[in-house]
Amino acid sequence: MIDPITIAAAGVPLIIEAGRAAIQRWIAPEQIKPTTVADYEVMRHIDLDWFKALVGADAGGETYPWVEAVRKLQRPAVVLAVLVTWAYCHTSGLVVAGDGVDNMAASVGFYLFGDRTMFYAKKAAGK
Image 1 (cartoon, rainbow, N blue to C red):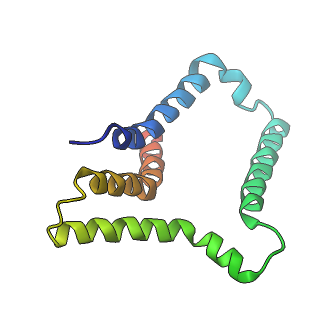
Image 2 (image 1 turned 180 degrees about the vertical axis):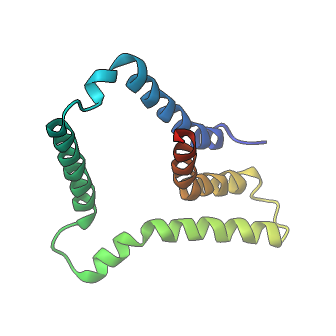
């Protein structure tokens, strides 16, 4: 039985993209699309500033190099721990964990591959 949180992890990105498409199509179609080259340039600069802010948020501050390394490796370490636990539970026949391990591994799978899948689906739909 799939946990509702696992279903939400798969469905929320689709709902968000559908909402964005609806807003762009019906609610504010003229406000989102640039009409001149200057407007397009302003939008690109806003996007560039947004990406710089994302990169800057991950940069951290002045600290020891090993602290930065540990902080940046936390996500991959958690993903690896979940997937190794899931693999161990299924290969060793350990049934004590039950559906919780499967649901956590499914959430990690959606986290790892959902973004790329959504990107390629949007790209294919745009053709």
